[in-house]
Length: 434
Image 1 (tube, rainbow, N blue to C red):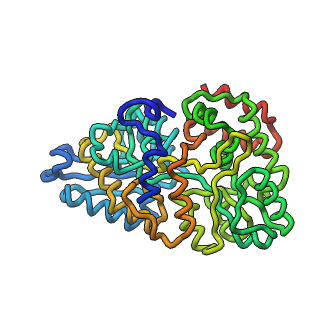
Image 2 (cartoon, helix red, strand yellow; image 1 turned 90 degrees about the horizontal axis):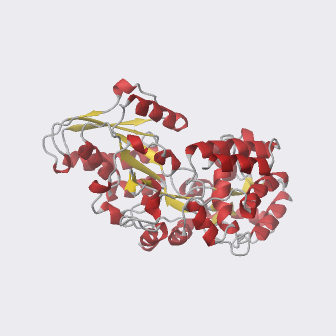
Image 3 (cartoon, rainbow, N blue to C red; image 1 turned 90 degrees about the vertical axis):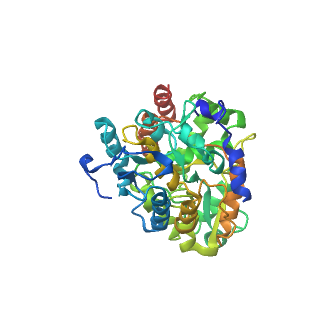
């Protein structure tokens, strides 16, 4: 992780901030992008006019409507004469389109980012926000995913983690205890063998985009690494030739060879084919998310009381059973916007408690706002997920650069197809991750 994780007065450990949570696509031309007025100033409102343009991939989703409406209403109170336009870009092309805007030095005023590499590779195009944050620093969690070199470039609106979801009905059909999910890798192996006997897939997996290896690395990694090795990886001390890293990649290959996954994983899209298979009862398990999509709320609609959840299993002695989690998505301000303080005021509204409460209620997002009460969700697995957040650590994959992640995606497919050895794949990744 960047220095902001371990140094600086603003930095705090992710698990400490999350304790409060546990307690309490049309492509537009650049000519149509934002041109916020610089006629006045900032958070006191009053005389501004003009327009702010927001790029994201969420605002067009019906489940995000109440969230967007609440954020716009909050901003309008402060700046009634400033128009706000949301442009919902297709996620598949989002960062390509954003890259074009960055190269031109013009485009949207406010942009949505995934935490981690996608943001850190583009901080030169963003405004450092530390001087604007105020009370938001304490109210919100998940900051580290949006920091680079001790500066903050986006405000988190969700937390993102990867738990293992399971179908209790399939467990019962396989002769397993539906209330006792696996806690060790040996137990998970037994689960997969039992599920195979009833002609179901143990896991749904879609690796058409190569993203499956990201989930594998971050969910099985805690059970393979010691806590010290895990923290070293996050801090940038990554030994791609270590026995533990090799073990993780060999597990990926072995799981496929042992028939844990559905057929055709490299031709199956993760979003949303993988998750459609799981919620349709084709598999017993899936590694999913806690916010955005493929999460507790969407799975509950299909599985109801049959939905269960568990953290990653312990693989080696000294490994940990935990759910990796960190800041999920967040909004930043582009460096070319005409009025940076005005644009931040919109980010402030997008991260307001009222807006994020609506996002949690309608979209099933585990919001970054530590003051939101999640106890009344009516979905049992939410209590488990929230209870694990204080012990969470950031994902292993999000500290890698975008180039290394792209290579990881390609190699994960080649490993499944038998076109590259584990040793060769690790050598390539070591060369990239420098």
